[in-house]
Image (cartoon, rainbow, N blue to C red; front, side):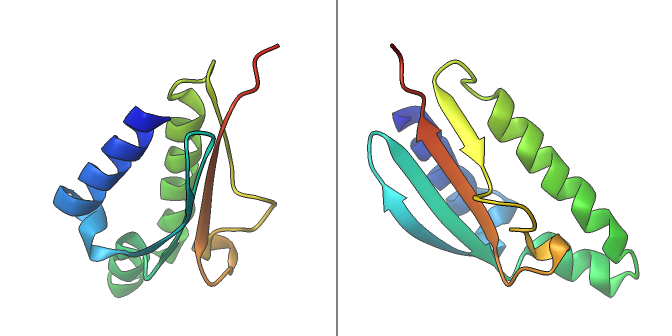
Length: 101
């Protein structure tokens, strides 16, 4: 979880995500939850007349977070339609440490 949080913060500080507004809801060794408002990709796709492409980027997020450390971390959106592309006011990112028995 530590590396995921570190990478997320680096990507937010130095990558294209720095243009998003992000609020961290919880950050611990077992849970990393944040929300994104004012998605840069939504703005770009809307501006150029291709709003339907936003959902593809949300799918890439889903795939990336579900592949990253899949044995250790579970990713979810906290329910269906919890993305800007589905009409929600923000995108929900929830990364939970997987319980090992």
